[in-house]
Length: 117
Image (cartoon, rainbow, N blue to C red; front, side, top):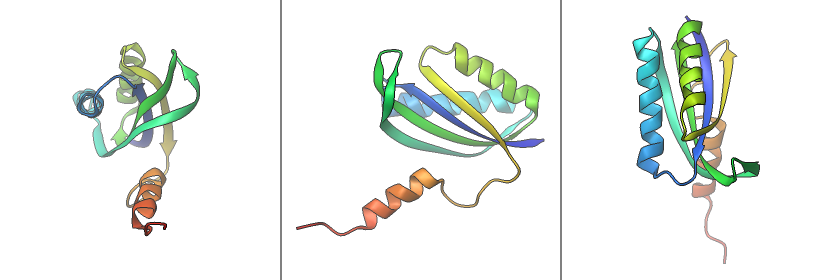
């Protein structure tokens, strides 16, 4: 099986719980087709550079998967058909990086800073 990384942008009017439920739903789709979800990260609501479907913000989610190509194609097809998903990006990688993604590392660095006076 091949290793993939997926980034998904969901509509901004969803709650955090609904956005994370989308990760679980699409992870179940992969599992039904013989794949596994290695790691999921919810990056939160972020402002986009331009409007997509009249939305300026979106819930960003990140999935690391180990799945056959048929399972990934089916998951992407269902993501594109889902009303709450605005964009999907899938990349095939040679190996998954250890630890959190770059987006989560940035968040950890910001929290570690001391307050300015």
